[in-house]
Length: 97
Image (cartoon, rainbow, N blue to C red; front, side):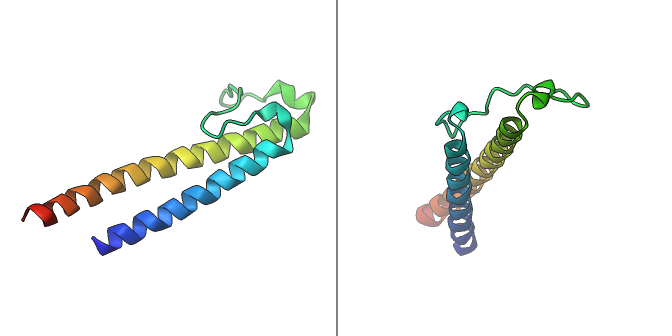
């Protein structure tokens, strides 16, 4: 249970770090919006090039970077949820025994 607590604390710190990066990337261009929980409007198709990259390369690359950060954020959130459920079950077993 101690390792679970340490793991959750470390994951929380990584989560806050990724949120700070998303906030920073959002502040670089006003067209990205202020949302940290949503992907930008970029519907990528495998093996096809984003043709809007020809129009505004900097914005498209920034949008792709934000999408990667949001994906990492959701992955960390899912891992934290599963780890917390495991920690909570161990905690309840410890209390109830």
